[in-house]
Length: 122
Image (tube, one colour):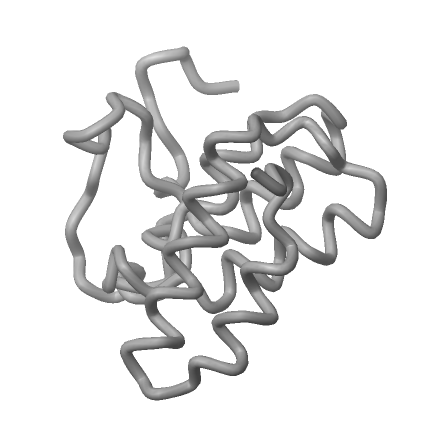
């Protein structure tokens, strides 16, 4: 029973921002609000065509925007569940970013494994 301008709950922020006391209305890069990965999963459950780019953004899980570990594994789980509406460019960025992260840690064998999931074989 609150008016539209009165908020009764905080936005579902990522875990690393949850207790910081900061309120983020919009992300500077894309103009979209930054939300927790669980929030995005619930949105995807309620709307099967929900945009996967927001869900797989590393900043929805960790403060390191270059940490693609959970994003890549989550994408593979979603693909197994027949969610396939991630554009090929985003899929490629996800694969190459995670492979580069693994290679920089000296795990080049796993980087090759990740690159074997690349949609464009060329």
